Length: 375
Ligand code: GLT
Ligand code: MN
Ligand code: MN
Image 1 (cartoon, helix red, strand yellow):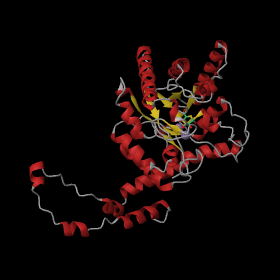
Image 2 (tube, rainbow, N blue to C red; image 1 turned 45 degrees about the horizontal axis):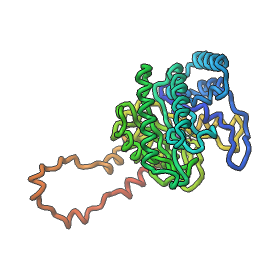
Image 3 (tube, rainbow, N blue to C red; image 1 turned 45 degrees about the vertical axis):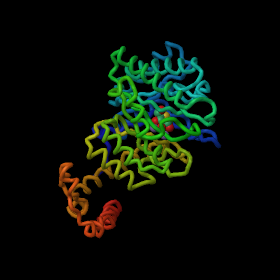
Image 4 (cartoon, rainbow, N blue to C red; image 1 turned 180 degrees about the vertical axis):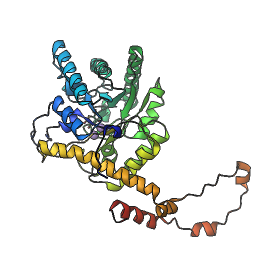
């Protein structure tokens, strides 16, 4: 196995990921921002399928209409030349100071209106570039001071915004499926709708719930000590896994956005296993940043590494599914439950049931052996 990424693997990166210049709250950028054309050229060379973007990643906010046209057509030509696609687009509703107290959930109606207009224009851009998934990450939708408003009102404003944008997408005849991305905190002290489960509850209250799903991110679950595979499983179970952000993170740290599978090997394995076994057809998007220690050479090593690790884990997932000893240890009795009346009067041998172990020590060690290459 050469673990060579190919477009059919559907690996994507954001323009904002590989071109991240490595600034942090304590230090200046360490790299030049890699221009979109060089990102496309290199991702294509490495075997990626596509590149995703925020509006501002391609078109600086103060660009003139003619500058905007020029940037779009140059980018389209470059995509065509290198055979890359744009499966997902999104809006930057977090960098501009105007969004300091929220975008869709801001109390100021002018800020909300501006956030909606910015998103409509960004949706036009995404549609023009061929994107079919539209991501919403509410980076500024949250609070530090809960005394500032009645919390359910913020959620009502969030709902109104997503409803309006669903209506806009339908009116324009865009093919978008919306994917809401939960995160527990950072950059706000507390972000609204912090988990997949919160998002699913919210989606059920929308005007067009069928258009809206989730975009879970590995690091966002790991930050809060949650198990990302469980987040993905719930999204799959609800048929709402519209997109996925793969990266890595250690719990209790700042938002690290690490290379996929660089920290939590077992959870990364179960994530890949779920994506592959569930028949998930969407892009495998790496929303990670190269380490601040790196120059551009390290940036492309980082991109290669995300894809390579995925493919290695995919091979392990296949072996896991084919390994007779593992499958034997994993076997669950396929016995249907009796009907209610029978259940109500069913006798149980509780002493036997209480005495039965689950055999999971052995299974978990078999997995360890598999992942470390001993098996
Ligand atoms: C930002 C954030 C990500 C989101 C991106 C989409 S931008 O980098 O940290 O988790 O997916 O807005
Ligand atoms: Mn993300
Ligand atoms: Mn993130």
